Length: 193
Ligand SMILES: [Zn+2]
Ligand SMILES: [Zn+2]
Image 1: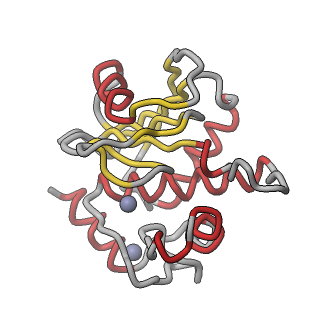
Image 2: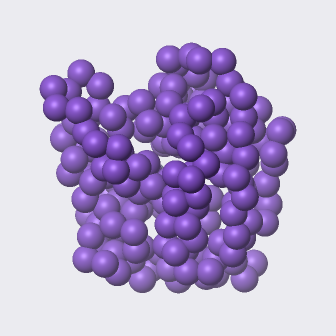
Image 3: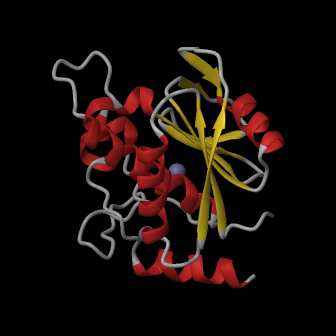
């Protein structure tokens, strides 16, 4: 297990500016209440693909950067068995490399295009969820509120019940930036280990 208190934020391709990446980093630091003490920014050169094998990308980032890594891509994540979570985001089993993808969060094919700010909020919330997994947190299938009255970032809900667009709106947008007490307890315990 790597040292989770240092997070490397990796931009995969030119998906956003370093200024935006930094904002996401600050937000993550705030949400983890000291369990992550600092972050660094990095860039991974990637050919422009519309789809990418999540496991392969995670392995590449693990090799290139190692440790606690969050990779941000705008390619669709193709998920296989050893990649844990969903089409929005996930993490490679037995590593601390998580990936989030802008592709589905933008809700392609949906008529009204969302603004950049909303998209970055979604991305941050999806990131908190994946990093939460790195700290050993599990899903809340019954929706649970976090410290800010919004859903705890580990809220999962039933994807099949919603369908993609409603899921993004109800669950991902419904999440806040504060975990529930139980999650914060687990994060603290994981950090002492
Ligand atoms: Zn998850
Ligand atoms: Zn929670």
